[in-house]
Amino acid sequence: MTWQEIYQSKLVTAEEAIKQIKNGDKVVTGFGCGEPFEILRALEKHYLDYRDVEIINMLTMGHSPWCDPKMRGHIRLNTLFASQSNRAAVSNGDSEFTTSHFYEIPDVIEHYMCPRVSVVMVSPPDEHGYVSFGTTVDYTFGTVDYCEIVIAQVNKHVPRTFGNSIRHVREFTYFVEHDEPLPQVKGTEISAVEMEIGKYCASLINDGDCLQLGIGGIPNAVCAQLGGKKDLGLHSELVGDGVVPLLESGIINNKRKNIHRGRTVLGAAFGSQILNDYINNNPSVELHPIDYVNNPVVIAQNDNMVSINSCLQVDLLGQVVSDTIGLSQFSAVGGQVDFVRGATMSKGGRSIIAMPATAKRGTVSRIVPVITEGSAITTPRNDVNYIVTEYGVAQLKGRTLKERAKELIKIAHPKFRPYLMIEYKKRFGEAPFTAEEQREFTSEIIDELKEKIKNDHKKLKEDIRENIDNLENKIKKI
Image (tube, rainbow, N blue to C red; front, side, top):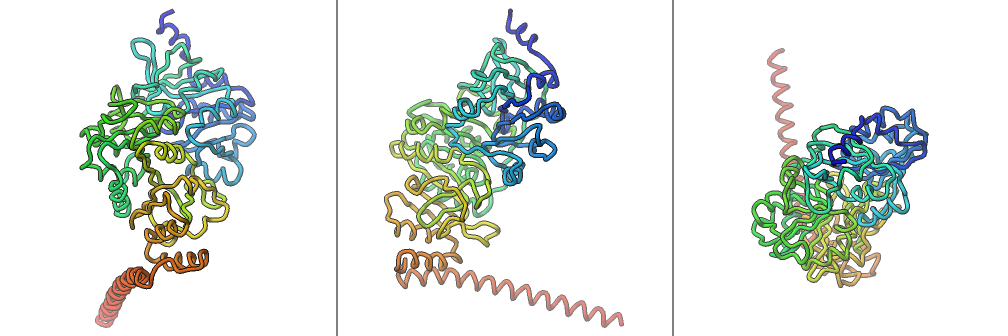
């Protein structure tokens, strides 16, 4: 049979394809910009036909119908990445959460979760009968080898990517043709705080370094500060639109990489059409399964590897919390530890944890004496190198406990530094800084308070003037 005949023989509707799912099955699905929505919509529509089916996935860009209470007993979510659509369900027990380092997830899914069915999204076949996994190779690519049933949504909007991202049509059980635009992860405007953090991160990056960036405001701010750099490389689990100008201008050209020289290596692309258009049929960009991209041993093969990740909280010892808030699961470990360790193992490598100094509109310090009770440590203190906020850089590697705490207090928000200094003294039995250094911290707080009082006074005068004007107008009318 020709590949065309094989393909046609496997072509079915979404409703026909989901009939292959049996009660009690575990079903692993694509995630992010590669989520096979048409097939999942059919499964959602017919949920009453199933009992005890488990959906296994990671970060979803849409809603999570499996979290709806009506799904109880029919379909249940087991996610490896908590997000806005499923956090509440994970917290109340309607959905399950499985934790793992990202590079281990393909192995965890295959050998510990053991799904029977895989549901993915791919590009249309080329002239040789090969489809591409497009934006998300990650853990989905390998499911073709071990799942009994593999169902693929064929979508013309999926970019055709190079690397280890293609499969022949003979390797799939069924195809469902349905074209729909991929989810768009559009970059938001970079805040002033993020821009300051980006400047400090960029100051730690040298010409010829190989980068892992991630997605979001801080990675985009870092990208915006790299215009003067040369010959950068890119080896990252995922990226957003921010890298495209750097790739197009040649600032990222991968010419100094030790492996995959001249090629950008990714596990997934999380961007808008701008990024999708760039990676489509682009031989300079390779997508590979995440157990390769995120393997610390592979990462370390590139000299001068620089990883940049974010977090939620850091204590004065340098312990990093990135995926939990107390007992609540906020996100997941992801590839943070993979790349922190890979960068540390790299010759000349550095790892950076970057975050705003405060949360909740400046009311909460992210640098704390002790991590919030119930929170899970994502990156242990022994793995941490640089911590960056909008107030500077703290280098923790090789520092004593006292030195670590002092460095972190220096980059905390000024209004929280006195509290942190008090906690430092409780812990270590001595003041962290000299009287002169403390006056410097105090002066920053006083200046901030003076500015606040000045603004409040100005507003009060304006309010009084407005009230007087209103009273005068009323008197005139009388």
